[in-house]
Image 1 (spheres, one colour):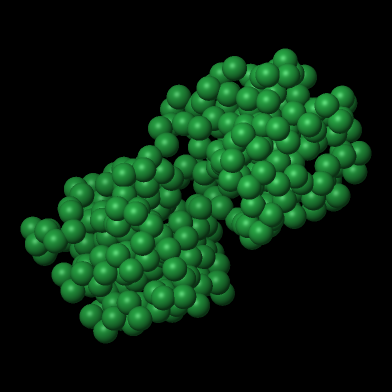
Image 2 (cartoon, rainbow, N blue to C red):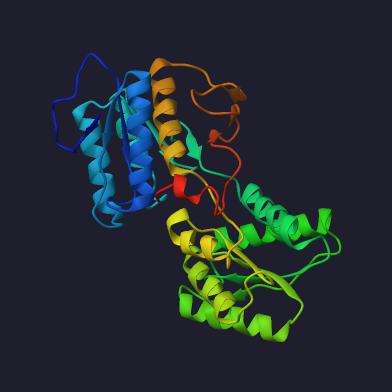
Length: 315
């Protein structure tokens, strides 16, 4: 069950696991909440889901502190400000609670572990491998990214380049073009790429905000079936483009599974169970890996969404 912040009605005879998202009311974190609820029912714990109404780190920390004060056994946080969370980690330890991170980390905070959705290398490798399956091993591929300073986007691009260099020497990966945060700018860049490169076979939208622009540019140019679009975007963002054919696929991860794994991890921390390098989690097809050196529990490889499977997801 899900219990709102401030409720004192959770059952004391069951361990309690909380998840504090970066903000409430958006499909991504709603999916994590659904996974957490499902895990709680299957694992015999009480689940608390509560977060700020906007991305305010101060509000988020106050919610975490309130949960600590309520006596919640394990609290997971999708961290908004990694530099400010260490004090609540210490406050949790003082109360005997386990505080850990999920979806967004604070590696230097003293957190118990981090439930990670995917690695940068996994994301970069997956999108190249899936693209090459569709366009061939001698294709020219363009990249439309978001902000030029975004460290996560640049890391994914770096691993795309590494994958091409190591496995697909005949693929031409064009230098990334940066659209900032606007779909309109992404559409213009994608259109220009197709004009300047008549032999272009694929375009990768690296930021979710650039996915609609890239897809619309392919549609407007009449290049469906000639140029394969893709990006790191959720099923709800990509659905229409997958069905029109302007996107061949999209890459992300399944936040419902991430929510399940988060509650499962909280239960292990409460029980004092030592995690192994590979862990069997109910309902997961493959073992979930844990790196004891970094404290990272990894959900697994990225999810690939296509026209055939997209309607199974809602986020």
